[in-house]
Image 1 (tube, rainbow over the protein chains, first blue to last red):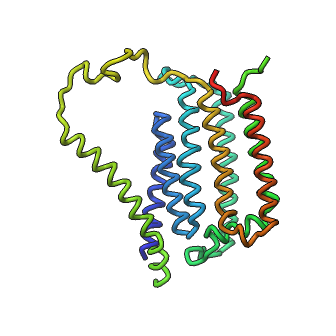
Image 2 (cartoon, chains in turn cyan, red):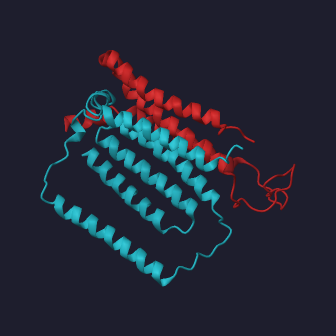
Image 3 (spheres, rainbow over the protein chains, first blue to last red):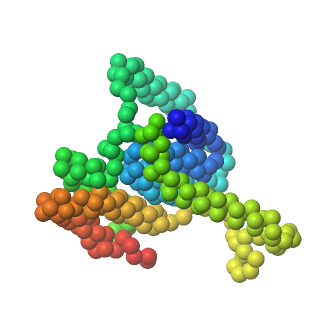
Length: 167
Length: 124
């Protein structure tokens, strides 16, 4: 009963702050709304008894990734208040791309109607740190090791792009 | 119903901590605005009351070096997060677990050596 109320509250906060993110004119307000969305989603993870995921979601996404977003915004020139004029061709292309994405999403949602699995995760322990570790370091060993190669690539790429060539 | 309540009770400390943290911030902000004296003059509301006078506004693009430090921080942050579930079940995994973490850490250290050799963290 309490969980249900918490679910409705968190869903309301998540959807509302996501809409606020899209509709706010100031990009910094967008980032702050996105942080609120992430907190609401972390609350959902708590409801699903996935503590580790919830904690990591707050630390990494709401904390670190959002700092990067703010940095990117601060690298832009925000002194110009008016938006760039976009050509008709550009507008047409963006509508087409958005429509395609909507089509794919609708197709996916339509298919899931046939699957009727009720989430019983609130009482299961699959989200606890110990069980997650057991699965990650036995069954999903290769993705884990590949993640380190991804990190290496990200490090080298970031350094290579932002550092001038040492003569 | 029983399960429902016991599940929520586990998170009571987290909830209490969140409320204390939020409550502290809200209380201090409200109290300082309420208790403090207000004498608003043009000089008082400047960004710096003394020292170097500010030039321009805060909306100027800034150096990419800050971004580089931030993105490297995020990468090593995620790396440490991978070690938490590993540390919890370290004894169950045994030597195999140690070796797989060594492989992971080895690749991360190669990246660290690259960063240091390349002088990416030097503030020149």
